[in-house]
Amino acid sequence: MCSNDCNSVLLNCWKNLKDSVNFANMAAPSLYELELLGEFRVRMKDLGLNEFLNSDMELLRWIRARENNLDQAELMLRRHMKWRKEVNFDELLLWDVPKICEELMPETFLGFDEDGCPVFLSLTGKWDLKQVIQEVGPETTLLARWRKVKTYEEFMRNKLTSKGVPVTQYSIITDLEGLSIAQGTFAVLRVLSKSAQIFEANFPECTKYLVFLNAPWFFPMFYKCAKPFLSDKTRGKCHIYGTKCRKEWMEFLRPMFP
Image: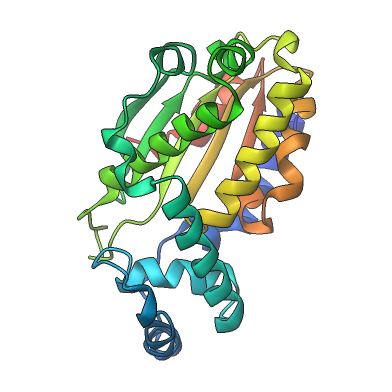
């Protein structure tokens, strides 16, 4: 949903929020989910998962992502562990990310919301993915993104909600002010598509809210590259506001973030 008509955007966003309330809230496992967790943990024993990955809430992410289908959840987690090893995900914070990635893909940590979930601000409108890809290539560009995701994990580690549930989700506020249509090259759009595909396959149930501000008229061109790879749950967490909707997105954000 994307429009410069504030009323239309606000209506769609609030409808989206209403439909996605259950998606955004972290909940302790139900009795049925605890039964599934027991069986799932036995199935995954051969992977030798560390304490963090073998925790209830981490394993539950895969089960919930596949609607309690343990066969599909197992397949998803096994594929993730293979990918995790391929990109050396657990050691990414030790990697010296190319300086250009930090400079031309700015992002910052804002703080924690009322549930203890970290909130990040991505200044995507100022990104120059076109130049980054030209300088370091698409694979290194993606690797820089996974390094960011690894930092998200570190911010959540050992954090508890007000109800004592481990924090497993974060929010990203994406400011699109300044985004140029010139960034919509084939190489950039291909990286965005691949990024969405890999993220959805490897980090299910990790996002709480994805809020896009100052979306220009051509933003759908970028969004449609990622949308086919996003689950209904992830799409339900996306809230998009046009360039003239400051009042509306301020009203939307204020109840959620201190």
